[in-house]
Every structure is written in C-alpha cells, then in structure tokens.
Image 1: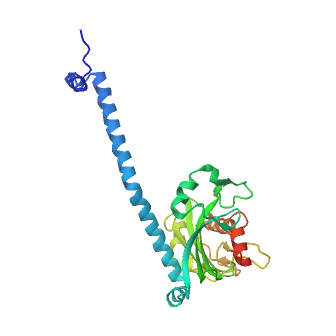
Image 2: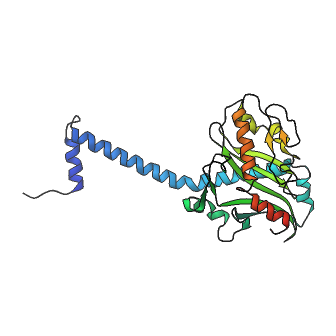
Length: 269
C-alpha cells in the first residue's frame, strides 16, 4: 500500500472529516493563524516606509511651526541668503558631528543596544534608563563655518503616563531658550496634556536655561513662576510638570547635550 503524499489529497481528506473532529479543528486553527500572521507581516512591511515618511513629515511640520513661532527667526531665514537650517548627527559623548551615521541610518543604529549608554540613578533625571549615543539636531548658521545662530535639539523624558518628546530651540549663546514644542505625549487630557497648548509652550521663549555658573536652572514652577528661570506650572499636573523640568535639566546638562553646547559656545562646532 503506497502512502499518498499529495497535499491536495491530504487537504481533501482533512475537509472530509466531521466538523467536530479534533484534528480538523486544530488544522483549521493552525492554518487560520498562519494566514493571519502572513497578512500582518505583509502589512507591517508594506506600511513601515509610509509610517516612517508620515513621522518625518509630522516632525518637519512641527519644526517649521517651532521656527515660525520664534520672534525674528522666519525673517532671518527669508531675508538672509547666507543663513541656512541644516541637520547633522552628533556624538553626544564628544559633542562632535559624526560622518559615519546619517539621519537615514540613525534609527537603525540606535536599535543596537551597544549604541546606548546606561545611566545611573543620579544621572537619569529624565527617567530614560539609557541615553542614545547619537542624536539628530538642527542648526541655523550664517554661511559655511559661520557662527551658530540657533540650534534645535530633540529631547525626551518619562512623563506621568508615557514618554514625552519635545524639541528645544536655543539661541546662539546656548543659554537662552528661543522656543519649545512638544512633539509626542500621552499625558492626562485636560491636565498634563496641556503641555501641548501653544500659550503654555510660549512661556519658554526668552527664558535663560543656564545661569552664569553653567548650572541648568530651567524649571516648571509649582504654581506661578517666581524666577526668570521658571515657567508657570499646570494645576493638577505636578508629575507632568516635574517631568518637563527633569527632561530639560538632563538634556541641557553634562549627560545630555552639554558637550555639544560647550563646543558651540567655544566656536569649535
């Protein structure tokens, strides 16, 4: 007696079994799961470039909105032929630009745990656990090799209900905030989520972030701002307010963009 290995015959034999057959139920369930897995995988692969493009477009729109909200910055871009906004990937450890990693390869690079630095509890003000070794920043300077007029830095930190992502714009002195915008958050609607309100974000413009001694002082106050380094807090959103304070102090400090900001101040960038 020969063994029939024809898959079509096997399929017909399986379908001919009673509907309450255990083997038929298991086979149908397995095939259904396999087909669903293939469809999900195909959809993920197909949609990934579209999703990446949408995220890039959204970031660009927020970047343009941030620049437009900075007093005099739109005029500077439109009237100065030698002023240009460029993007570069920097090594956060050294504060130097890197040519080995481009904006297109940055995401893939940071998927490797070797390209992230573990933070001690004392260092980890933003409650991230680890810091990426590289970051894409945006720079406005006059002419090739000219002084930096503006730098835009992406920042992130743990909020009350998820990671908060934002962009900070610093003026050429690398001490004064030119603007701030939140790009992603999942805080409580009506409370912590108010950090996305333009009126609240507008408070940051013109605030000194660093004192004369180099200490990062920028903070969200508990209530009304009492010093030049503070912005008004959000009632009922203490944890979100603290998260913004800690995020700013981490990224503008020595374990974040500190080496980069020092290099720009010295004219070495």
